[in-house]
Image (cartoon, rainbow, N blue to C red):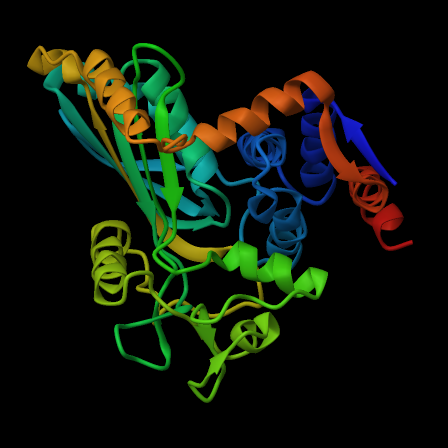
Length: 337
């Protein structure tokens, strides 16, 4: 039977689970927040599904759950951070205010995070900036899971990017998408639930088209959306998130099951007020024009609908999912029982 939990209860359990398995409270907080926000907003592929990978990453020594990020370079409009084999979430949380201040001073600011791991959604990283009036874009690379255009073997990461901008009459416009036709998380979810994936999403280890998610995950590869267009964007993300940060390219990044990839993250923050631009009202006009064509959706609108439903009714979880989370939160001995 499905059950529901409050946001605060789920956040508390996720934090406790991470801390019980080797994370510092400081590092656990932003990761737990992202996982909980994804569950609240219906992005199950990047919610609790990712928690075991985060736990195993630290338990196995693949990642460091206690290290503090270190600033390695600073200029008036750029901050470079070494995450110390930790997670981009903490590096971003500790740098966001400084980067926003740089954008307010100079009009634009860039944050480069290297020597890091990331395995979750990107929109939680930038929605808050848009609510403060900034325009923001971020991207992260990952180990090779995506073919080049016309290729049959993985060479790029799924290389997600996200964009957020303020809106005068409502919630910010925010999108978050991978460069693959279907995200790695959705393929993982399909495999766990025993569902086929749509045709055209991926290939098996022989480079042959398949609808079996396990064949894609076990030596196969995902295909880029839009053919050469998606592959070109994946290439650009490799430059922004890996070449600029010193992180490995997708094809260089060592595979470690479904643990969070070694990666880099690029963040661009723009303060439109420095240009005298009324972005919020302009965006409102664009939203009205889109809806005037008969389209009921703008980027992020369905996520906000699910958020409002969860806030009113609670976050839906299966009983097994809740029981497993409570075991993880109780510590390693309970989790293995």
